[in-house]
Length: 394
Ligand SMILES: Cc1cc2nc3c(=O)[nH]c(=O)nc-3n(C[C@H](O)[C@H](O)[C@H](O)COP(=O)(O)O)c2cc1C
Ligand SMILES: [Fe+2]
Ligand SMILES: [Fe+2]
Image 1 (spheres, protein in one colour):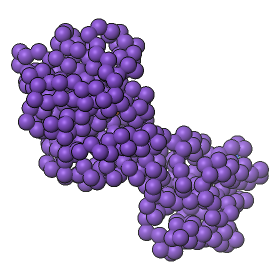
Image 2 (cartoon, protein in one colour):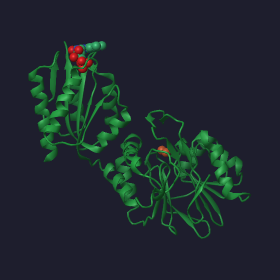
Image 3 (cartoon, protein in one colour):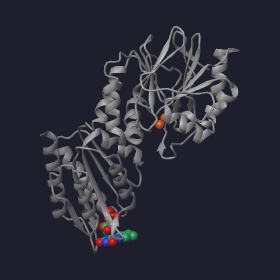
Image 4 (cartoon, rainbow, N blue to C red):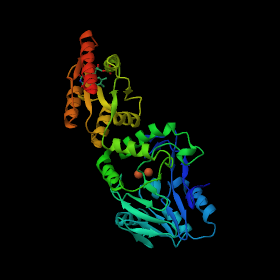
């Protein structure tokens, strides 16, 4: 199956509704698509490939369009195996195909797939003529691997952007945003960004800067819809996420074995609401997937984290969230923390040190509870929530 998205430019990607976790980490409740595009001009060029389990479907899509015609070029914008896994199969099906990438891509193709013949190493700004169309290459390192680049077709003002501007969610029937109900993709875009690209805000900003004067009518990324009607919105989301900008709202994350720390979380959330904060996402780390917690922390300016002391450490699943946040170097959040213990406290010290390390604003003192929940603890929780709400409204 394929779809012509512009005259002589075809969508030849596949839907994955089988894999439960992307990168073996991130849940896929709506699946994911691996997008690939074929330009059928005087010369033919395929842009990116698909994940390993889908190679045959993918090759069939290409054959449907090309028939007996040869494939001249395979452009590789990104080497993560969800896009590069079918390179060797494409070479077997089309032995004369020239594989096009930058110096880092070419090195990785040899390293992963042992291919070092008929490769064409391009530099930033190089142009590949195909006939009526051409492709111009923009090297955009670390979005989100070192070799990542984008390919631009000036004749159609069409950007093959790799993972940038992508999102989770398979394509239900249509391919272009104008054919789809896009409702689910916005949340899935926040989650995709927070999970996969989140660490690379600065390189994303650099890439956006590089593209700032490039007119774009369509964005063809490697995951999710082809953006046509929503180019502006999608660019805006990636721009603000990569600047770590956030909305007025709070993510409350906690771990709790027996409900004591949970009681504190509920008190804080209720008081945030009483203070007029509308967007509050409360996550129990033992139930919510980290994927969704990260999405909400990228979305909301306020973060409150709570943990019981567990064998003189943070509760393990809270530790995992903290470590994921540290890894993504999330900037400029307003932060509060709380914790519980029974004999020797550690959790609150750890969470306080974490906030300091992130250089997040801490408008209130951490709340520490020994054993059971009392009216004193409740009042301390409400004080924290009031300070958080005031800081958000400032
Ligand atoms: C396996 C385990 C290890 C714990 N380790 C500590 C500890 O090192 N120091 C401490 O003061 N309390 C420790 N506690 C006690 C808890 O921090 C305390 O009971 C707290 O109220 C639990 O919060 P929760 O009800 O939200 O699960 C431990 C509890 C358990 C079950
Ligand atoms: Fe990737
Ligand atoms: Fe990808």
